[in-house]
Length: 421
Image (cartoon, rainbow, N blue to C red; front, side, top):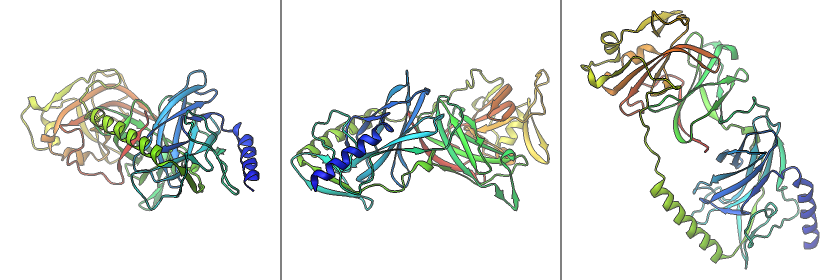
């Protein structure tokens, strides 16, 4: 019986190896918290994306730069992963398919209700049903049993826009709100990073409820805000979703883990030492103020430490800022950068930001505590973000860079997001 099982496993792996030959890992099984090295092969692409998922969502992701169709990425596994199988998926923006293989993850430090593992003491470590060995771990031997889910497969994914550097962020928009339903052409989705620098991205509505953002130049764990506004100023409900949530596996096989206690303990101790070293040296730097946006300095700029403090932003704008006017467009209050010598179309809107977040409710901003604002930067000229074209940027930077006590605008989603490196 055992001999027939081994033959079935070998034939299954050979049949599928051609489909997922573009993924290689340095180990066959991993401890939660370890770093996974993933080798990628993909033709006609400059960037590939790797993500680790269970049936509920993405647990880790990274971007891989490809040269001549090959590249290597490092996937840092979270220390709180449950024990069991995960799906490792590699895809490119302009590809119609993504390749996938199973990866066994063992959490030796904590138990979870989501664990799907059977511990089997043995003289050596190997995981039943694991992908063929592709790394340098001599203690791991692949095996399987009847009825096991195949280790490698190719899955369909939606086609996306042509590839550029960066990371894809995906959001779901509710097009019906307040008794009205809006079409994709009437919705402007936006993603902005909260901080003292400007990172603002307008998205593309794929249909009436799906928005894609193609971000670049943003890495690591960042606070961001998602918005979806209509031409008449309404805010629509919006929420972040997995970039390729259709790729989530519907089911994963049960992990039977044959282990050597000494080997697992040795790897666990080494992994913990690396994590402690990273924690001591890899603290995320706070947001640093930089007034250069898009290669240009603001003109004019106001450092409110150099002026007599007023209680509200509206009073500051009235007393000091002469090149911005408060007007109404289609009955909605707007702040417009005004420059008589500017040849650009003054009928275009001005992009108003506070700590990088777009402001649509001007009255809310004008009533904000001016003592929390450090800089007011005004950028002249025209700027294009996605489909939007703006005549000037009016940027307010608070002392904290984190929207301290700024009144929340309706329907916006604030969250922390891990941008892959």
